[in-house]
Image 1 (cartoon, rainbow, N blue to C red):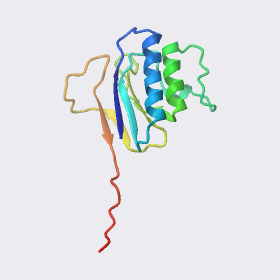
Image 2: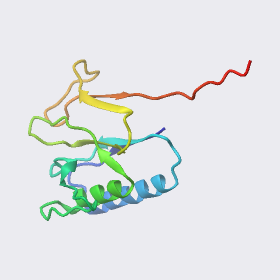
Image 3: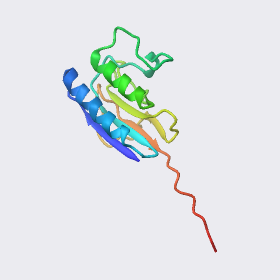
Image 4: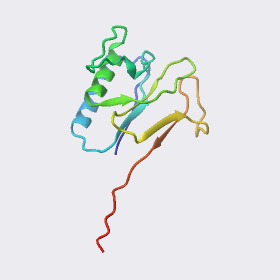
Length: 140
């Protein structure tokens, strides 16, 4: 399993997002991991949901920022989707969780028993990971 954690400060500009997308592209192009999750604080208030992708996989919403568009196109190219549906107090999702689209190994929900104090911009979330171990074969 590949786990990537991300923090991009607010108003970082397109350059930071492009560098992140290049790193993601390099890591996923060489990846042989069965499960991949890349998550973190992306600080993109314009990111609302994954449904803005059209059938061809390209983003056609002209209101998207370049930062949001670069993320969507990079992750979509690698067959990944954003699975966090927990919005903050302002109806935004600043914390994003990308997984392979065929993965059923992750469940995201608002955390009822947070380990840290939540704030208005970043609700506490819980991520459950369901992994299957290798089947053991008994040769005796």
